[in-house]
Structure formats: C-alpha cells, structure tokens
Amino acid sequence: MGEARPRRATTFACLSIRRRRNNNGVSEFEETARFEQVGGKGISVLCGLGYWVQGSRCFPWLALNFHMVHSLALQPSTLQLVQYSCSLPMVAKPLYGVLSDVLYIGSGRRVPYIAIGVFLQVLAWGSMGIFQGAREVLPSLVACVLLSNLGASITEVAKDALVAEYGLRYRINGLQSYALMASAAGGVLGNLLGGYLLLTTPPKISFLVFSALLSLQLVVSLSSKEESFGLPRIAETSSVLESVKKQISNLKEAIQADEISQPLIWAVVSIAMVPLLSGSVFCYQTQVLNLDPSVIGMSKVIGQLMLLCLTVVYDRYLKTLPMRPLIHIIQLLYGLSILLDYILVKQINLGFGISNEVYVLCFSSLAEILAQFKILPFAVRLASMCPQGCEGSVTSFLASTLCLSQIVSAFLGVGLANLIGITSSNYSNLSSGILIQSLAALAPLCFMHLVPMSEPVIEKEGKRGISKRSRRNRRVGRVVDKESVTYRRERESEEAQR
Image 1: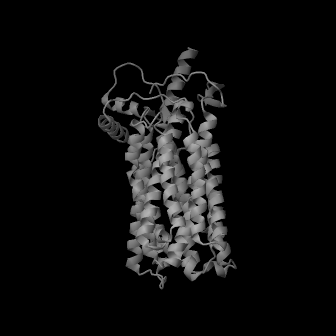
Image 2: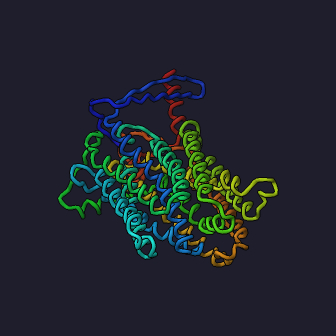
Image 3: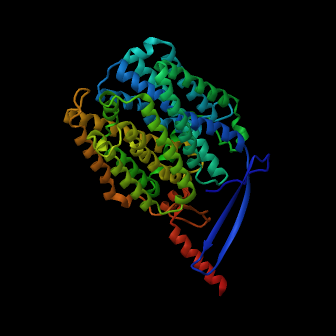
C-alpha cells in the first residue's frame, strides 16, 4: 500500500523507533529512524479527551442501573434486556464508518462526525437529567438511552478511524493501546465520581454532570480543524451513492481475507457463546448483599486501574509475543475469573475471613476487565491492516461485530436466567448459572487455530504480475508471517557474504 511522504511542517512530536534484527547470529544492527508528525498535539487533545470521556460513560450508567433497579423496580433479566437492547444502534457502526470514509461534511470526514455524535449524547443525557418523565417512564428512558448510544457509536467510529488513519499515515503502530489507556483513565475517575455522587445525590445529578463533560468535548471537537492533521483528502465523486457502494465493496474485499476474517470470527464467537449474567449478579450484590454504590463504584475503579496496567504491559512487553499463545492465556484466565462470582454467591469468601465488601472491591471486575483486554490485540492487528481509505469501514466493522456478539451473549444470559429461575426474589440457582457461564468461556479454547500465531508484517508490492489472492492481500497491506520474513533476511545476508 503505497503512501506519499509527509510534507515538512510544524513539528509537534518526534518519535524515535529502534529496531533490532538478529539473522540467526549472522548479523545484528540497530537503526534509528526519526520522522515528523503533523498535528500531533491537536489529535492528542481531540482523541485523548474523546476516549477519556468514553471511558467516563461508566458513571452515568452506574447511576442509571441503580435507578432502574431501585426506582423502576426492574427484574434482573429485564434490566439486562434493557441494557443490551439499547446497544442496537452500535450494531450499525459499519454504516457510520462507510459514510465517514466517503462523505465529507465541510472540510472533514472525521471531526464533524465526532461533533455530531457528541451533540446527540448531550441531548440524551441532558434530557434525562432535566425532565423527570424522560427518566421515570421506561419507554422515554429507553428512547433517550438509544439516542445516547447512537451518538456514542458515531463518535467512536470517527475516533477509531481517525486514530487508525493517522497511525497508518505516519507509520505509528499500536496507537489503539494509548486509546485504551485514555479510556481506562476515564473509567477510573468516572467510577470514583459515580460512587460518590450516588451516595450524596439522586441519579439525575450524575446525568447532568456527564452532560457537562460531553459539552466540553463538543467545544473541543468544534474548535478542531481536521486539515491540521496532515491527512490526505480523498477524491470525491459526484454521486454519494456510488461512493458508498464502492466503499462497501472495498470493505467486503478486505474482510474476506483470511488474515482478517479468521481472527475476527474467533473473537466474535468467543464472546457470543458465553451467556452473560451481569444483570443478575448486579441485582444480587445490591438487593441481597445490600452493597453501597460506593463499593461497586470502587470495584470498577480498581478494575479500570488493572485494565490500565495491563494495557501498559501489553504495549511495552506483550505486543511482540505470538498472538495465539497470548490470547489462549487470556481466555483461560477469563474463564476461570468468572468463578470468582461463584465464590461470592456461595459466600465461600466469608469462610476465609474476607468480607463481601472487600471481596467485591478486589475481585468483582476481574472477568469484565479481561474480556475488554482480550479485544486489544485484535484491534491493533486489524488497524495495522486497514486498506487506505477504508479505516472507518474496517474498524467500525470490528466494533459492530463485537457489539453484536455482546448482545447475543446478553440475550443468552437472559434466556439462561429465565430457564433456571433467577428472579429478584430467588437467586438460589445463580451459582449454577455462573458455572455454566465459566464452562462456556473455556469452550473457545478448542478452536484456537483460527487465531494467527504472529503479528502482520507489511511489505510493499512490486510491479510484477500477481495473483488474484495476492492482489486481495495487498489491499489489506499484504500480510506476511514473521517467520518467512526472517528466512528471506537470512538468505539475503548469506548472499551478501558470498
């Protein structure tokens, strides 16, 4: 995938990349390459704040969950059904990604979409905070949450596409790790703030505070100029419909490549086949154990801190490891961590002198954090393989499929809860449901062959004739295994010595 060299302009940051290459003991060298980034400061503020606010969405959602349980008296299954049914606008993310790739609004095709999505969120959360009917009547509340998730999905698609496009343009691999760090940092502060606000104020105050944060993000988005990021402007056609059809065709061609489709299938199936019981566990913690909102909020804070630490460790040390063993270990830990809820429900922790509050603080969010962390290697891989001009389409397709798999998982959990008879007055079979959930989480280990062993290596194509399969792979950056690249380097070194 050829790229034009970036023009010299004001330098906001300079990144030094050091590479080591050892050709089986034949030669070893270091080379340092420095390149300039245009608009680094602006994109850091825009996307950093965006991901931080995205992570902070947990605190109005915490208030919303308590409001639905205590004020609206929803059953555990109904609560989970409402939570994940309202995520349906996020399934349409590929449509937003295609429009963001081909349709300019003013002089930009990313920043204006971010601003539109943030405005919809301000409208939704502000309405729930100001108007009593919007939060007390379930249909109105669901409509506002749907509007909020619509705005969040548009904003997330545009941000993810902008980060992927910027990373490909200036050859910066792994920007998604820093995005997850910003989101985790927002989650830390959001859960702290959410737990405190719920102790002292009604839920509507949390909605209004989050609306204020969104208003700040809206101001930053409206004041950002996309042309300052130094990204190339794509050629516009006279017909928007033709552009959309062409972009959809390019998206189909990209995701049909085995290097994208196989790991994506594994990620989606590994989430969808696990029945989610988060609504039942949340109601059990608040109705049976009578835990304070501050305890649950602090447990989320500890979880986000763990996610932040895991992301830093991945970016520093784990990014170069073979992907399949890494995902194998994470999935195994995820399946076992679900059993921590089993210990809580059976009150085994009390036998070891650990109170429910301490146990929830330390272990309640571990499974959720591992489930989020598992997606990071897949996001980094797909972002590095996006064809030029399809950044929004490919990243949004990944987000959409993952969201759809979570909805399927939640619906399976609702079905399981109803099948074994979990209600707000009967949690006797919750432990059995948790065991089933843990076994289902271990099942994806049986088809780990779909997960690639190595990270993709991007090579430039020559002008020689290539096959149809090679042309398709070229559109996703022509992925070549590291083993074959190392072998070619050894051959080149031996020929040079001769």
